Each structure stands twice: as structure tokens, then as C-alpha cells.
Length: 466
Image (cartoon, rainbow, N blue to C red; front, side):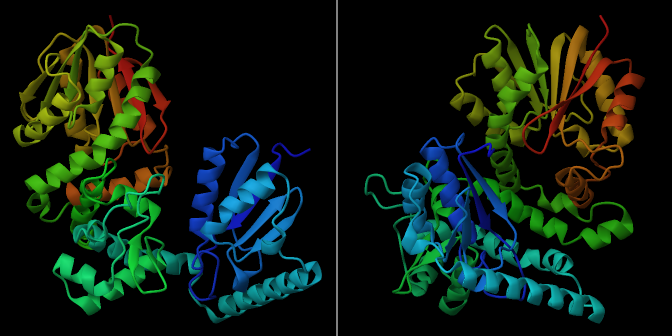
């Protein structure tokens, strides 16, 4: 018995040479639209949507299969997904004009494609050709750099926001030709057109029959200046990271960051806080719930950044107060976030360097979010010693950070972040769960535990003995 009324598979296969393939033909846009509509129509408990690898009908993609009927849709576009959802998934009537009708021909084509793909793979292996997985890893930077350049040039804002028409999704309007976009950005027309075409190929822009470009739904919502969800400042943090990552080879040779101080300007700081604030605003309430504390009076937020974690604690405990310790340039930005949260009366901003300054005393909760990883082991130990001294007996420390497995290979996001610390700090690293436990217990903390969170980080908590 099927656990869902319908199970939909959509090919999002990535390949380098065997073109056309479903992703290049718009498979990811079809997947995004299907997932959006399934959620919008409240079908999540009735329809399971699964992205998958090659379905064998590459030249007619994007391909979609709906079970239990076993209906194959070929050449599906994002604009047709609504009809499939309404007719097939809601009313139970497959859309015949979009479905593949000749089962024998379909079976023969899949058989031929499967045999061809297997023969090609054997031939590539025998010839010693580099596997696609390695080639993709070597090539991925090109798409990333094209996207980051578009963000740096504020290209998506130059195309404009959505139409004012009621109900239209962000990015639906604001179309322009390549010369028009180039003029708005102050860039070369020919080079701008090359960039626009690449972005359209990546699904980040749409190009109409008249050659005009417009934002996709995502770029129109998140990367157009002035909209509610404008996240360009957050993505600019990745732009600043680009230069540091280009030094990785030398950092591995030398063992430390190369010229990292030059990247610590005000724009980089603002971009970093913007990048972390929205994520923190989502994660912070979950962190507070996961801690399971029944009472909090005084909070110390070390390196508190935007103050999102302090704000979450204060909302959960209306009588509590918080102190945010961070560098003076950071606190100038923090103050804006605190005002927006309406917490000026309950939050004290204290300028200082958590690596050198004392933390004070009398706190029953100390928060360390994305702080400990900036320190080499000896620095991390000194910092946690100051945390212990700042806590009242029975007080808790909550370390929100990337946490690696014992062999330091899982999760991938944490392993890659360790490299990010290599290119941007003097000795910072991502610690494993056993390393956290050993460090905290050696300082006298008890009840050390790891609490999984949704997202790339987890929480390590511990208590100072009563």
C-alpha cells in the first residue's frame, strides 16, 4: 500500500556532456513550482515529491512520473505544473495532452538510452576519463562566480521587482534588454549579455521571445533592493569570502590565513551580520526551546553580533536582561537590530574584545554563537574558562556552532567551514563533539550534551556545578 495518494518523481539529473538533460531544460524550475503548489494547496500529506536521477528520456525533458498511475509527463514546463496539480493530483484525472502516450516507444527509448549511457560509462572508465563527479567539483566555481558577480553588480535590482499586478509572484515583471541592463549597471553591453545568458541558463533569470530578461521567482524575491525579503547584503558576505578562499592553496602550505586582516572592513562586517541575522532569527527560538531552561535572569551574549539569540531568550523570559559583548564597530550595527526588536530597555551593549577582556560575573546563561570556532584550542580553553568564571553556580553555557563527528568528516558543511576558518583566521577550527566534551569537562562543567538543530549548526550545552 502506498503511504501517499500520489508519489511524483522529477528528474534533476546534472551532466556535463550528454545534452540536453532535464536540469538544463528547466527541471529544477518544475520541481520548485510543484513543491510550492503542493504546499500551497495543502497536499503535503497526500502527495510526496521526490527529485531523482535520470529517467531515460533525456531529449524530451524535463520528465515527471506520477504514481500509482505510472503516468509519464515529458517536456513539462513550470507553467504547466499548475494544470497537472489541479487535474491529476487533486481531481485524479491525468493531463492526457502532456502525458507520454506510446508506452512501447517510451520503453524502447529508455532501453536505448540506458544501454548507451552504460556503454559510454564503460568506455570513459577504460579510457581513464575523469568521472563526472570530479569534473563537476572542478567546474562548480563558474556558476558560483557568475551568480556572485551578478549580486556584486546588483544586477537583479537593475531588472526590477515584480509587477504591481495583484497576486503576481516576485520577479514577474521588470524585464529589460541586455543593453538596458548594461546602462543601468554602468557595464559593457556585450559582457553584460554574456552574463545575463549564463544566469538565464542557470535558472536565475528568464528570457522572453523578444530577448528581454527578467528575474526568476527566487532572485526577484530575495535579490531586488527594497523588497521585504531583500537578502543581497547577506549574499555579499559570500562575495567577500571569495577572495579569501582563493588563498586556500597557500593557506594549506603555510598552515594559516594569508592577509586575512585586509578583509575586516565595515562593508564586510555589515554583510556578515546581514548573512547571519536572518538565519539566527529562525534558529534562535529553536535553540531556546531546545535548552529546556525554566528560568533565566541574566544573559551574556559573547560576540553576539545582531543580538538575535539574546532577543530570543528575552522573548522567552520576559523578566530577563541581556548583555551583548562585541567589538565597537559591530555594536554600532547591533544597536539597530536591538531597536528594531524593541529591546533597548533590556539589552546592554558592552564594547570589548572577547579574546582579551573579562566577561564579568553573575550570569545564569552565557551564549557563544559562532565564536568558539574562531579560536585555536588554547584560545578556546581560555574563553571557556572566562565563561565558567562569569556563570553563577548552576548556570549554563550554550555553544551554538558547527559540530563535527569524531572522525571530522560529517557533516560536509562543517568540514568545509573548517577550511573557511583556515583561510580567514589564525588558528580557528571546527571542533568535534568529543573535543567539546573533553574541553568542557576538563574545566569542571557537567551535563555536557549535544542538541541537534535544524540547519548547519548544533548546540553544545553544559552546566557549572551548583
